[in-house]
Length: 415
Ligand SMILES: [Zn+2]
Image (cartoon, rainbow, N blue to C red):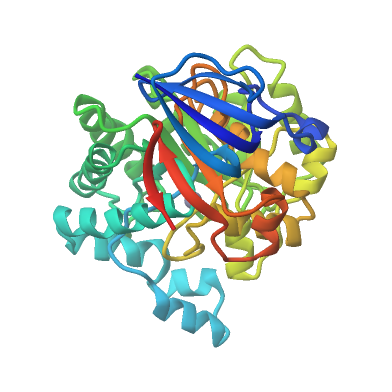
């Protein structure tokens, strides 16, 4: 059955190609438009002056329509929030000092090991439902609070259940190399071997991950340890992403580009050298390493922001994500991330919009599938509350500007 969505005052984000640098500031749009959907996919779009054949019509009442958002970097499955560490930090302790005192990722790992799979699933389910209300219709979720074979598998099984429970697109990332468990603090290479020899084969056997990720940072995984994990994953056909350059010039960008990673995420510490490497990566056949900035972390921890403005000026295809996690970014709304990008990183609303739609989809190598409303893409779209919506999202900080969320052409939620 062909459903024709009519009376769209402005249909935006209609091309699936990655947006580089200055291209990020210009919106592809049709005014007074229709969108034709069949079997959950976009099969046509155009001006209301020439309507195609259809079986049923749904009027969108002269509202603006944009593609559903893509959150390419989250840690949505966790056992408990860490508001007590947040309060410690307000009182003056640094994130690193809290981690050394047994907080941080290892605190989440302890709580995760104790939690049942059902409990983790129920908690994550309500978080995902909220994220959809906020416009996220494609979501990447990482493991990495397990840090043992059983617990990493448990987290990834929860992500698999979330994939089945929701109509949105969910991608799973195995982040066993997130931190070193207590027992391995003195023999870190042994833990890397556990990740590649025990965890990875078990995860691949149950088809539980779409990519791997490594926390390549001073005090966490070195460049060579990251490379061991990435190369092992590659042998199983799993592409990699990197957490890098968050706490310093960690070499994360260098490892990511050298090993053809799909994205390198964080990037609070980058300079010409890293920007040039990233730029060159797009000339290579693997399609380039996308830079993903996570302004929620900088905001929440009071740390420097990634130089997103400079990266766009350099012509890079910037991506923004929430990094939703209980320690450094309890932010799971890409609308709020858009606000932070505009107010703190000086991105225009149009640039921030492309960074959470088509470019974010490319960080998952899914921009033919999601992140735009182009023929063949999944009909995931947002009907906005009022006109000039791209500017109103960052302007009305923290207020939901979405009236209706459609997933695969079906109404999912409405306000
Ligand atoms: Zn992260």
